Amino acid sequence: MGMKKKLAIAAALVFALLVLPIAGTLSGLWWMLGHPSGTAWLLQHVPAMKVTGAKGALFGDFEAERVEFDARPGGLHLVLGGLGWRGLQVTSLGGWRQWKLSFAELQAARFDLDLAPSKTALKAPADLALPLEVEVKALRVGALYSNFLGEKPLRELTGQLHLGAEGGKQHRVDGLSVAWDRLRASGSAQIEAQAPMNLQAAVQLAQDAAAANLPAWNAQATLAGPLESPALKATLRALPTVPDAKTTSKSNKSAPAAQTLDARATLRPFAPWPLGDLKLNAKALDLAAFSSAAPTTALDLDALAQTAGLNQPVVVNLTLANSAAGRWNEARLPVRSLKLDLRGRPDDTGTLDLHTIDAELGSTSQSAGRLQGSGRWTKERWSLDSVLKDLQPALLDSRAPAMQFSGPVALAGSGFG
Picture (cartoon, rainbow, N blue to C red):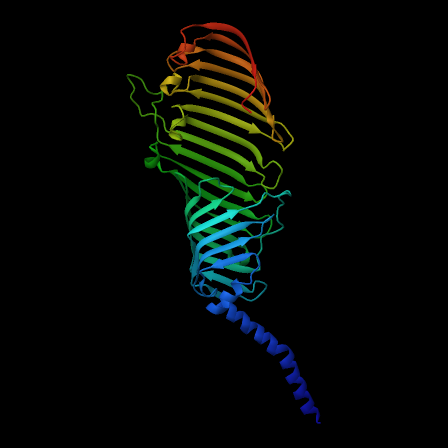
């Protein structure tokens, strides 16, 4: 047998042993992903997954009545009802990121997600790089239920998702819109895939005031900085609900002050205690604007919570003035001003120390006395050592007796745990 003939036979054997199996594997894979019958076979053999009412192929247009993935115990459990997508395209990119998945539309009527609590501390990832690019041009979820959300779901979630954008350097969510209870949020977010994984997010929040029969308000929040320690800034603005006693008089009918609340904090999501120093500032804040069960107020508030770690004391200093103070039975808060120095430890939520309390009681027109003191609360017992000066209970609530008293008062008891 000649050399050329031997080489031809060897080449045929290599082709038969290597190329044909690879081609057959690729052909079978394409059949499973690109053909309805192949997709149906594949979905029946995915571990821990059950799919009912499947129609179409995974590559292209697909829908399913119900998809369940159950990795319990210890893992997640999710159920997707009315899952479907349109226009799924697979594109070869070359390089280390070989493929891009692009969905024209991805939707689910209902998404149930049950996450098991983590038994290990959350650790910051080295990076967020992905081996493929995923783009969803239109994402819609009718309702998202989760054990972390409580009984009320996220509703009407829409947006656009792009993982591995900008050549794999960035992950992005745009045009996000979602509702929860009476609240509606919208915004966008992006994060770099490589360390330090800088994050930029902006969210606008508004209340369905008409449905709640409450004054309209809106809030904005931004999150910016490296993933391990982003800075949070939040603002809230609401229409005024009560006249400002400082600016309104018989001769001065100026408009009541608008309500404002500003918050600043540094977050440490991977630390045992994720909250750094927190600053709050409020002007003319009416608690009744946020809950029909709350009293009418006009609070000017400055608060600072300082903390250094999970096992370190948290020191909270608060100063408050209420220009809409009034009797409790009139749906008002009978506190004219308040100063607090409160301390505790994040790893011991069963103990709080009230180092200082100084409260001037009454209404905007008349003082009902002053309370000064200190106290302590635990799950088993609480105590308050205070001094009262010219306290008049009838000015706190008209149903109380008309009397006045001063002097030291020591209270102790159990409960409230």
